[in-house]
Image (cartoon, rainbow, N blue to C red; front, side):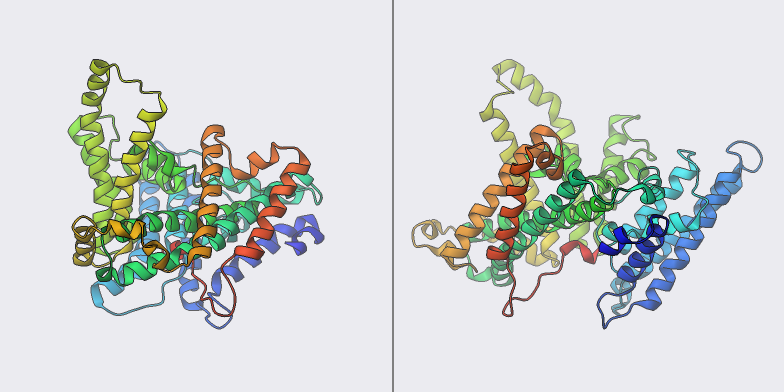
Length: 471
């Protein structure tokens, strides 16, 4: 980042590209993934050439079939590579080294090809900017999945970014420290409870298993949100805006709303390139529900080849269909009972039900074995152990009283931030930026010292890799 500011402005794009390629090509200092990287670079070349030629060919006329063939060629190269690396081991029982963040790379590339085919914007002629668009290091590992018409124009203006911009620096740093806080103070700490209870589920009763499942919901949210927030912060420091991938998803009042707030870049990608091409909601209700199910099954398969991911995606699809079927009935009941739908109690009830449904679905995401997931769910509702509320049993699930109290306070901070995000519709960095300068820097310094004091790290701690790096 320091080199970015001190080098000549026109050389910044080269530096960011080289840094991005280096960042991507090495999983660690001692684990080069050069062979897999060659495949990815080849895919960049194929999609770049396909998009440029597609952009030259007229949309109408005798040559329009060539546009379709070029699109199919690019999609075949991208998805062929995705299927090989992600699903080869599933069908052959042989492990291969999977490039990090391959799904995010492929979705970025294929989304770009679709947009060029639809003439949404012109193809980028400069291979330098296109390569940087697909490999931009803050986003390449775990997203957000950026669109060409949003990111590429910003990359072209890197040379115009001011070296000294107090507001931009405050915004970027606040996003960085908030992301690190969510990861190191919350996600990595709560993972100790989840790993312990899920790893020995047969030792625990209903309350402990339900508590661990709620903890996992918080863990995966903070883990993934933290990476996306850090990516936003890194990009912001270079004068680039990337999409805010999460907007208080657990404050949603329905599963449909949840998917508008959770992993927003993936949800919008599935909407634009799967759901709408299938017909979206512009067809019969039955066909619309089929489109919904297909979209969410694709989402499940995207996460992995395991049956558990397919079930997880299917559960969310079914919940959306049920919501669509019961929505008219619910409205009629509200009219007959004159329910105050804008009251806190009504909204809290809907939010609570939504969280419970999402939380139960997460079990299949976390537990890869289907029979094990079913058994875990069975024990949740058949092994009552209410006494753990009185014998301090919840302090014996992986964290002692002190660590549990730290976690509780940190989660309260998370809730306050999410409430603010939902009410304002702005990112954490923008919320902080709207405050007086002394307040924003007090928040940044407080979060920084919280990292130093309560962050989970040290010689006895085994770092927890970001969950979504596997995708």
